[in-house]
Image (cartoon, rainbow, N blue to C red; front, side, top):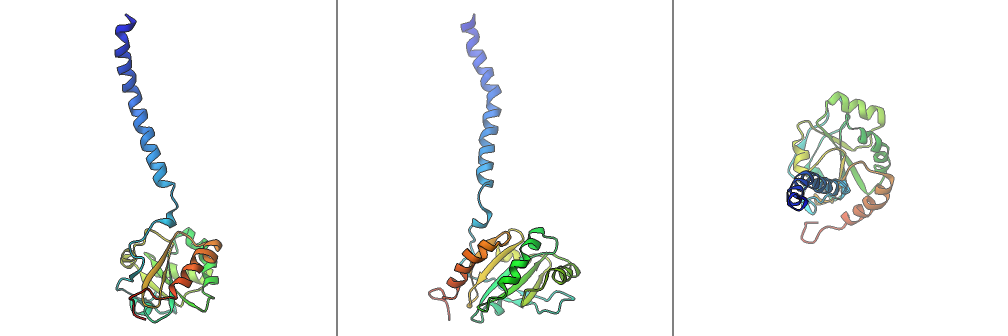
Length: 195
């Protein structure tokens, strides 16, 4: 009798275990996919020209906006994409003030999907490190840059080529390490780009 019940029991056992096995497999896939470092996500725009854009100044801020043509004047530019509602942007902001002291770069801010008065209050409270701040109210320019979320920071060489993208808040280590190395690399034009 136990021999006749054995295939039936195995069949029922398999039906009970199948959802557990499927769930475990999916959990492993999700864990593997989510456990990567977000700032290592590759960008299809590296070593490509910045998209065509014009960002108007933020209303109430005594700074100009900027456009793609401003990024093609021979000097390395660092563009930080930020918003007043972004908690990590607040955390990294003092580091941007330090980064802006470098004489070999120009630091621009792209204010992302924000209210102008909130952007002004953010910079009045935390300090204003940017040479220009453009308002990307609808997020169109950020989409064209391939922004996943804020904060993100781009290094653009003097010919307007995107040379590096940092996803997430900057840290002292990233500024002193990877960002510093990528700024130095961006000082040398890519082969075939106009000087």
